[in-house]
Image (cartoon, rainbow, N blue to C red):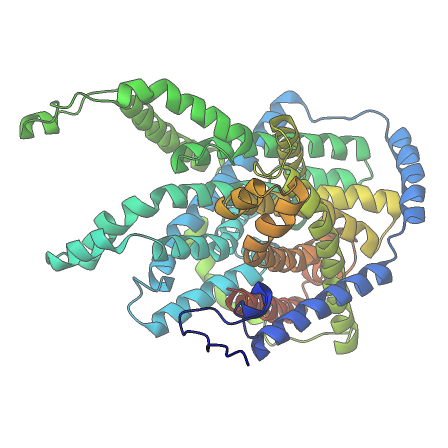
Length: 574
């Protein structure tokens, strides 16, 4: 008889490695989140089927496109002086509105950030202000300000400014929450005030991120300024709306081309400045490479002798190195641009003294909300059409962005030319305003949800593809190198290490895309792309502002639901 000694406590139990590996319990909340994602995917597929975007329809649209562009003939442009004036006015009001939003977002972000907010009540109120600003379309704000102020650039500046608070304040608050608490707490321990804590302990740390956020939002506002022309805001958008309404497609497309070139140029400039401020070099595309070249040229001048600050007097006399000259010059250039932006915007400052008398009757005209002659059933159906368009467009954008964004990521693309080519493609796509895409597609495919869906899907690839590329590049490289050392192929590394580490970011980006598309689908409805936007434009032009309020409330509830769902998903998949 053979006796077997019992296993020692320090010895592993019998069985395969897979059997002995710890299993992560699948929590009910996680199961619910997975089922919710599946339901959203199914709903998006059903929405795509309902809109009926098929290869046959696309083929027919190609033939229509050929006939349309043949009928249009050549592009036409306004006279050189008028075009320059309109371009400067558009750039001025966009930059002024973005800077107004940045200034107003600072106190809101301070109250919304968990580490600087005076209390939970202040934080909740500040966060709600941001969500409300994102939910109210800038077109609706422009309608209100056109009633309060004279026609011109001021309604556009205020609409852009107040609407942009939603995104900028959120990003500002997130940056504050991610700071190193050491400097701020040291100032507090030394008896410093809250203002000193913010000015010396918080602001220097968040300034690069804040500048990058403002520049990114300025790009978005430049593309969005096109639609403000449809409610009377001066600039290129207004002239383009006149051209398309009068069926002068050659002039309309010429102005659209100018807007496209402005957007691409602004994207490259903003990318360069963001890369220089953040010190990035690998994921910023052309702008990052330009910024990297500038930093390398000034690197030798920034290296100072070891004894240059040997005395307090020497420390007060900083040498004018190339780096310091560049930073000071950039600061003065930025200040001059701000002054020029306000100047070319041609603001009627006296309106701020006279609009107070108009305020009570204008606000009263928006209350109480009602659905007018359309009825609740018609308006809810229109809102559902908007959601269907947003779901279908988001699905198409996700599919295309996963491919394009992956090939634009440094750690996924097979070589640098491939990555550079797809990065350039994303820049070009981001430069095309969705409204221009929708107008052209409507002329080619006809009125309805198909044009709006395709416009949002194409426009969404530019934003979502960049976000996905950046997220893939930011994953820790250890797991990828481990799989490569074990002999895994490029596809296996991508599926086994890159994607799993970026799952949470991909989910967050997808919900952000859905949130953005719901609001954008509403705006595209203004030009006949389907959904509730059509009724919004008619209500505004017919002075039926109570119906406008009802539509805004529907949009607000929808955006709040998507926002809450996204927050829950990010928490569950953390």
